[in-house]
Image (tube, rainbow over all chains, first blue to last red; front, side, top):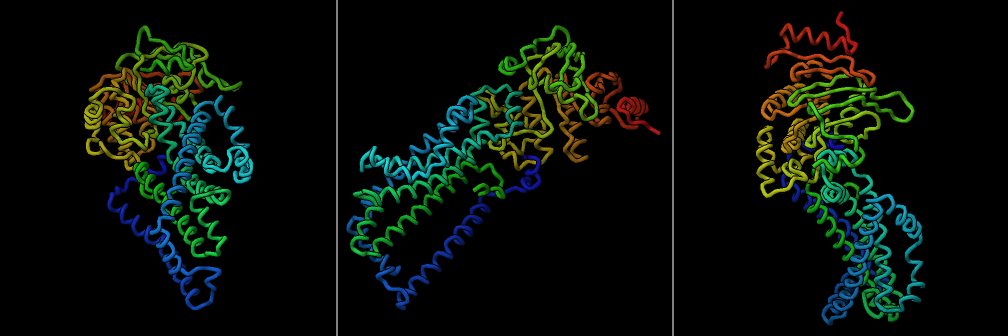
Length: 277
Length: 249
């Protein structure tokens, strides 16, 4: 693998070039959404779309501002963020733990991998009724649902990453007399980190998805609950605010993981960045 | 340092009595196929530079892997010192560690960085100390791999076709570098190569392996530095090419 990479990689790269590249790319990502929003506003203003069906962007912004000022949005957003963060944190611990067990030993793989592969095929959302029976309607079933959904992408990707470490590097570590712990710390874990971050990105997306469902079933707070309440009062503008918030959360968290990739994988040549995503 | 390796499948590897490396009756076969190494005997003296030649499939790689502790010993005995280093054809640097960290990988001590820099300067890579390995050229990668091998002060150094993937100019430079480093460090060297001229330029002794046996074992008693046009050099090249089954018309 390195042999193929070297001819390209011998071109030196500089931090500044990377930043400029990223800036242009980030801007491009926002162009088409902005155009879509403008078209949406146009359709509402000209009466092509009834504002009872779909609130206009301006209306959504005004409502959002109002919800922000009276504290409704902040409180619900805080609750939602806490659920997603807690669930994701549990998923990271479980996913990484299981992947280490099954990635680093054959026995561990035999014990851990099969049950996880079976559970993985279950749609996590189908667990909602069971979770409510088990955990009631408090915070636990919501966090558990997020954790359940987000564990698998982390487990699967990290496990794959550990198993696909270049065996030539492992041989090299043996000839250098590295201990098992040193090999895990210096060779296996850093080598699997790109896959872990890919898994984390999928996991973040999955945790928002799980949260949406969890908060629309038996919730008393959170963005999802705010939207369900708005449904009862035919407030499409508030529903839209919730959708926008979910969208922004997804976008921001994706950018956070991308940033982590840039920081932790700075050893990769520029042309390899963002691959495997 | 290599205790972990030696208990890991190569229990038969012990310290040699005479010579830095002593192999007796080493036989290795995969499955029920023919022997890849066939009752092989080989002794390498301290500080001796041995070139190992042979066609693909002659057992060169298996012999080197056994000496490196990567392949187990089933039949025969292999004695070699604890402090050995290997340089592979493809460098095998960890892409996520900077060049200097690769050099002192697994080495303890507060002066790790200083030692790495000193060694990198010795191999002519003092300007790439903090570079990422994937930004190095092929020649630079091999220099870093050499630095990583030598910083451990090995008694026995194995080079597995270390210049095969380099262009002709880089290869010449690397050969000179290896000759200089060997003169300074005085470790025994086993150089696996396809290149007869390379063997004659560098080694004290050339061994040709054929179907798992040593077919030819000649001493290269030429003055250093050596020259391709030297009559003795031309004569030995003929002998080695003959042993490899390449005949001059």
